[in-house]
Image (cartoon, rainbow, N blue to C red; front, side):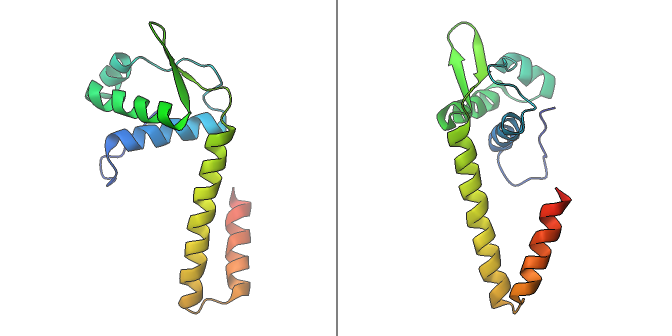
Length: 122
């Protein structure tokens, strides 16, 4: 289910793009699966069609989806580049958090302990 959080500071199109991207990477949306049309999703979610079109455009730019003229938008069957980009972003965030924790006096062992707990949580 594609969702948006109106309390989130990110623009709606970014939330939609992130949500669809996560669903594709997790396998919830299958390779070559057709997405709802811009109009269908706009009506279903009560969101301006231009916002949906912008999200789809962003997804296509990132390589998450591809468009077929007259047919619609589909999940890309090769998401390896997208997964690599997501992994790099996550690693960069993790490095930043570790640096901040170290500056705050959190011991290395505690960082490992927390990281292990969170990783095991799934």
